[in-house]
Image (cartoon, rainbow, N blue to C red; front, side, top):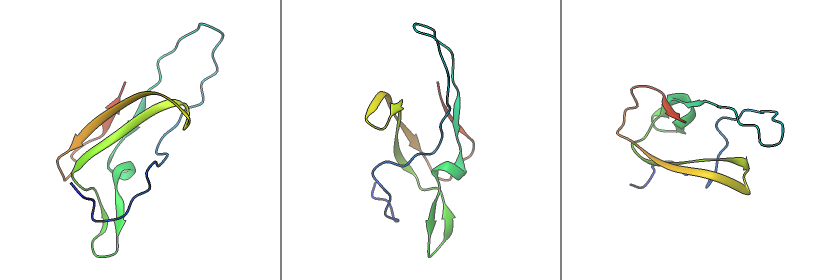
Length: 83
């Protein structure tokens, strides 16, 4: 599906800074909802379009360690969590 509004290839929507000791692990939850997935359309205001979204998690934009594709059947009805 082609977006009706041009979007950047990557866009930071949520982050958490976590300090860990070597070999230590800890759960981190980031919530992406309608506000994070919406785009500003000059014709319609803020909208959440349907389609596929690629969600990437990593230590930086150059070190992405987890990628998942989610599908949104517009309109978005609740937050989307990636764990």
